Length: 147
Figure 1 (cartoon, helix red, strand yellow):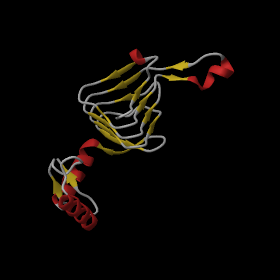
Figure 2 (cartoon, helix red, strand yellow):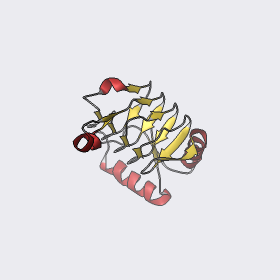
Figure 3 (cartoon, helix red, strand yellow):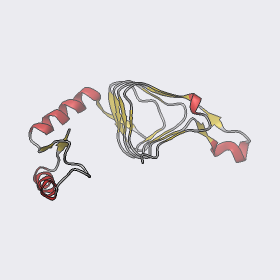
């Protein structure tokens, strides 16, 4: 279902730490074949992802990149350069926009004024009334949170 790709031909060049979340369609590449036809070789590089890292949906991580511990990479990012520990990076190319701690404090404060939904609010368990409640709550506050 997640359709993540961890470079199948060179997976031994990729190191992934503990408690790492790869959202759907993440690609982790240890090679760059753009030079193959013209120069006769493919560029290789190790990829290291630390522990306690979240990689958002559709992110592409290129060869030669190191992502430190406690990092959030936003959805759709292209990580072409290393990202230091305890940071949040987004974009194409991915750039650090905040510290990990500042981001978590911001989200914690947002949760105090936004609706909160328990684990029953997911496909397979959610009722029509819960769907309407969630739509209305998020419409009013602009954001919501789920366990």
